[in-house]
Length: 457
Image 1 (cartoon, helix red, strand yellow):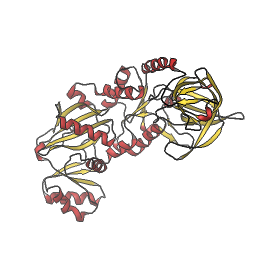
Image 2 (spheres, helix red, strand yellow):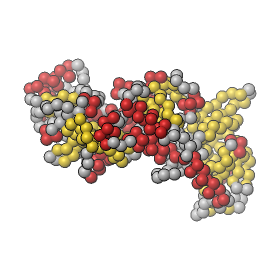
Image 3 (cartoon, helix red, strand yellow):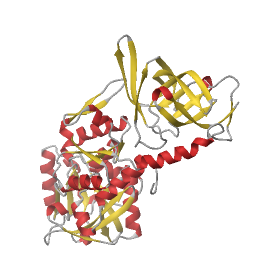
Image 4 (cartoon, one colour):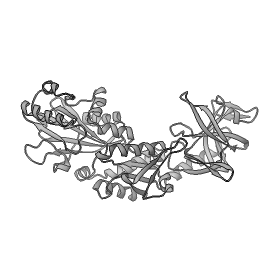
């Protein structure tokens, strides 16, 4: 009996009609993708419930499975570490072949190429695997599998918007765009969510929804206020461990909120930026001022946003006074070179799925004001960016791992420079300036990743 190195299998007792599996004669045991795993008692039996995404590279289809817990095994994972996994016993069908009483361990294989792996202990006696061929026994299911992916791509997604204020323009637009594209949008108030961490299964609860609603979410759009960064990132991290696609990940959001850390990461990859300095003691104040070329210079709070906590200082003596004042309150600040030729202008590049989908020129509201933020009354207009500016914006988003980002660029005599990368950029200014449906682009990004396709289904 000859099998291909890939075959379609079914597990009737779990209501899994077909799942593409790797037939690996080099592995002993079989393993299947599972998440949100929970073990509980039903009478005198131990029962395990879990969820599975049966289609490779897609989270849109979720099956809820339940079986009797057969026990626990220590298994060496692909990275070489030992992992304790639960296992079940089930009957597996490969074409016309029935493999009974197969032990299948359960673990999250979301990042693996196959949702299931069949080891040699699960194969019938005398079965051989031809590593050069695929679907020897189940070629007739290939079309059904591909058609199923397309059909599933048409099913609505359940998308959670993790934010604090439903009435904000950006949040209203995202919900509107998602519903317009036929998806179910759920507003998850950050302060109403809480985490349940267990060694066998962990989840998130929200007082506004029951557990089934949270468990069935396909994707999360984080829109976290700066003062809730720590808690918001903890929630995003938990959603990621539950196998949910997050439009921006917890680590990337945390990096972007720390201005110094984000600049250090970008500088290590040779992204151009104004000279920026940082010190703990006031004894280095004069040298900090010298390093940025002297006044005028910019002083920034380390965690400011929307232009808040940014000061332009016109003289060295004033700079020393301002720096000393901040240090006396143990406030962390950056001292940054002032690019005088920018004339109170900067460019916001809006990146979605690592592509610039819109860009606008922001102009300070009054003469002498150097901050061009829209929330501070600055004017905005659509602008055509250069290939270099586009490359810098995309590179910065990729380096920080932010599929969605507002990348602020300033034009200088030395070329374009990065000012900041925002992980939750506002939509009002960019949509008004460009006339583009930026919120819709964010939803389409989620569709591409959850449906597992790069173009139109």
